[in-house]
Image (cartoon, rainbow, N blue to C red; front, side, top):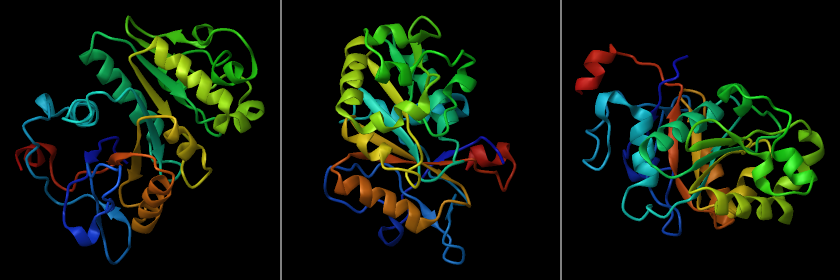
Length: 260
């Protein structure tokens, strides 16, 4: 399965995953195959809006532009990435978005591994996983002591070595306080959360953030699962920034696909 992904296009109200007039922004919507009831990529994509920077076919850069720099989103600071179910590539995507964002801005960006059930940011970023979020939740001291710099303006807070002990604290006031500390240290905080069908942690984290980006898996995530995740977030008054269809394969050669 390819690591490529696409921003889900708007295709019609009857298949719209985001049908709220409330705080959710209808950024991305998805098609569903009526035979399988799974979310699928469309055969062709419409041209990207002029506000999207897609030079060189960089889909991650396009996602960064769409989430952080379109009108109305300029003040987003803390964003949660959550898969509708495990295995959607959420950790990979969150890492790539943080890297692309850090390359575009001169301010600071921090990745946070809040997926204590299946942590993976330390593997994506090649750092030791012995002193991170779980220690920050269980111990005292400034949040800065649990942060690992990756580059001049990109840092990471790994899950740490005691995820099972700290898991219950992800929805606590302690976690909210630690996130407030991170917001004081960094211009952008990107949080990798556990899958929504595994726990309510993504919803709780989204309530302490500026919004949530849902990650769906091509030809696997079910339409009703995705809609249920949106309803759950909206019921908690969490802003849904959009959805990304990940691990898509190309049915036609890439060179031809790029010209569509």
